[in-house]
Length: 513
Ligand code: GAP
Image (cartoon, rainbow, N blue to C red; front, side, top):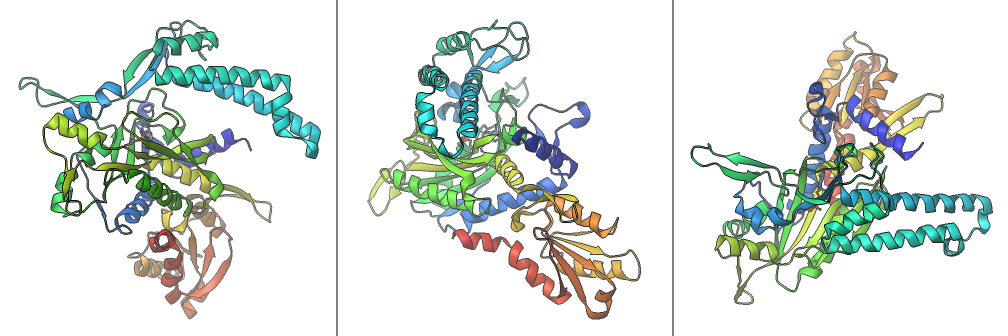
């Protein structure tokens, strides 16, 4: 199945089974804003818990906070977001549609890549085992021509971005004859910078309202609380502060479902270190974070690092952890060595010292910061995408199953009475009453047992327990395993232990500690 079709199926599966709904749907939705449903919120909470515990439980020197979304507006001046958190935009005069100029050019480059790949695939089929791809790319005239064109445009594009040269971005769009997908014309306006922060007002106008922003990242709440936490927690460098919370960006090209949203959630950790030691910690956190991702068992080949060629002015190293989504490798997490830029800048703008006295060195300094920043929603999307499977069974029927890592599954255990009579529902309720303190359980007595299994497969429940007449006699049930569909008869007294072994977060945490 084409990856595009897989992605469409995942989006509709998320809606059908209560994972993700478009926001304000009865009013035709709100662009790039989504709500999490009854299953989605459980999965999301489990992802957040795994991240939180991996930071707070496994690292004695990492503590958490929960800072406010509204912050003093000068914070965003100091952080550089007021002046530099921009996207270059261009309008088509005929369709009146607005686009990100950089995305138009990136799409154009991707189309050239696609053409080259098609040529390569065609030749690979034709020549079979004797095909030498490197040689073909070097010698085929059509591929060489496309590659040369791509390289030239890419070089101009990278330079224009680096120099913030908006005229050159427009000129590339004109020279490449990029047309508006809606009007089909090349009637473009100039390129302008557009700030991505949402602004609102605090206080009444009569008192003189203050313009405030919805935070575009959670990190600044950590920076401005650095000394509060360090002093009250008696923290010694190196130490980290972790936070999970909402962030807001007025994304212009918002697409690919929950991949790029206007309201989303971040899990960020700022690690404060001695100046000069930041690159060692940067390397360490890269490895720690990659291990966290890989522990979920989706396959190591689905991850890669993408080091940044162009560093932000405040960074001296940066990399992304990319995951293979149905629409290609995409950034899920960023790891950045942010130097002393943020603390230094807040010291300048607030007039308050943001320094740490290091008792071992007997001197004060502005700590350097290594940040790990992961989007909860992108993590959610990668988890669903990697878990979604369509299987044809031996009897010719098919099933859709979410092979979620058991500790992340929204429902851990479904308890199903074989029939709705003879005391079986009561026995099933007894089991739930005993286990509900440990696991999120679901009771289901509607439809055939086969249909009930399918419903649980579709939401990723790792265990289904069926209560039958024998259960009343010998206190046993059948337990069915989601991935293998195998069933075995076990004592009800053993259920807690069997399930806990797989679904507890402890196993995942142990694997990375
Ligand atoms: N404090 C650093 C920071 O915010 P970023 O690379 O802009 O860095 C970090 O964002 C992570 O937040 C990204 O890797 C991504 O997972 C998530 N993210 C950023 N913009 C997003 C959006 N519009 N929708 C969903 N997730 C987003």
